[in-house]
Image (cartoon, rainbow, N blue to C red; front, side, top):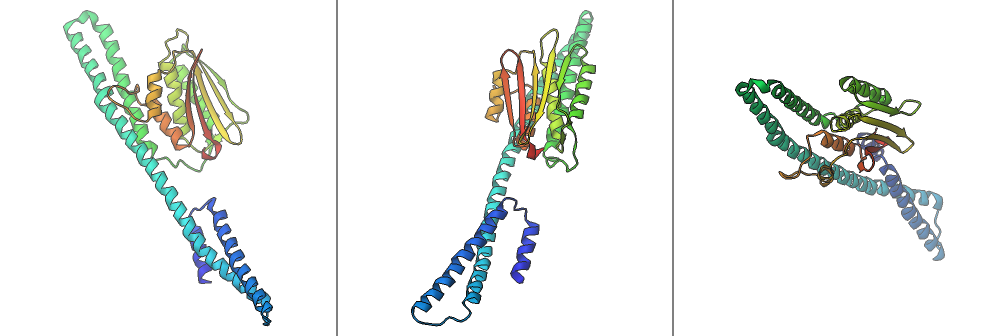
Length: 310
């Protein structure tokens, strides 16, 4: 009874998931080994001419002992595997945090400083040459918008791990996509966005996926040099995977940026533009998904995540 109480408490306090079958396997192995040993002992005694009273009860006793030993060994084995898995996850999380710190460092030292220097330079130009005031103010506004966008992306990155668990409450992801598209079309009237969304709507529990889509959509708009920007958004879902594809008629993502994201680190000579794609990458990594880029006739970015994680 003490063992049963301990096992019950252990099962309710540890999330063993698929390891339940492994624990059951150890119990079954204990029954076979000890129960079989009991049968062999009885057969051996009978071969020697001995009489073994209540042999059935004896075999059951041996099998019960096997269950006890199997539980003890199984709990140790499962606990060890869970600890190893948690350690691997902790190491992966530490690597992502280190990666984020390096990107933070680059944003603060390079991107923000560069934007501030450009702003200061054009501010001086306004004072020295009033004739160029209109152009200078336009550039200053662009750099201020860039700084605001960088700090907003940095805030989202800072909150990414804080809210990595998301919530158990589901929401309509297709509705969020339509809302983000409406915001972009209001901000950039020249942009044409074509949606291909499934019916019925897709429900998810990961708000971070909406952030990733918003970054991809804005990236497709702001880096599109076509006079008539066109963006196509395709969302599909099956039993195993949720796929989100953002396709546009722009120049595509530079291979240098893709290489930096694949490498997982930045240098002073090789770094991505801003933090938007890093934010998307980290969200996809948190969801155990894949982020792919295609630069053929059109530029395509695809997010594919297991449905179990969203």
